[in-house]
Amino acid sequence: MAPPRSWFKKRSRWTRRPEEHDPLEVPGVLSATELENLLSRERARGERNGMSFSLVVFRIDPQRVSDLRRATEILVERIRAYDTVGLVEGDRVAALLPETD
Image 1 (spheres, rainbow, N blue to C red):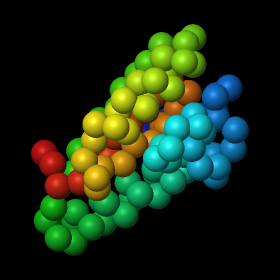
Image 2 (image 1 turned 180 degrees about the vertical axis):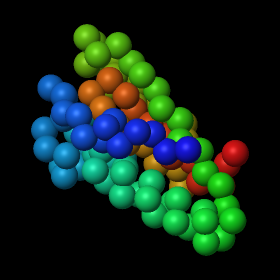
Image 3 (image 1 turned 45 degrees about the horizontal axis):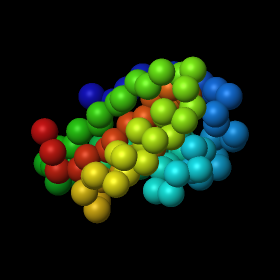
C-alpha cells in the first residue's frame, strides 16, 4: 500500500526543491520526487512480475535536524545494496525494500 500522495507534496524547511537530490545532504538519499518515481516503477514491476515490496516510513522529531540526518545516515549504512532511502516529508524518511513482504 502506497503512502498518501500528500506526503510527497508537502514542503518543509529541510527540503530545498523537490527535484533536488539528497535534501539532507546524506549520500544515497533520494528527494521526495525521486522516491515517488521509484515507488511507481516498483509498483508497476511488482504487478508485472508478481513481486512484492515494502515501504517503511520513519517519523523523526522535526525539531532536531541533526537527529534526522543521523538517523538517515544509519539507515543508508544498514540497508541492502538494492534498497533505497528517500525523504518523504520534512520529518519522515522512507526505505523502499524490493522483494520483501
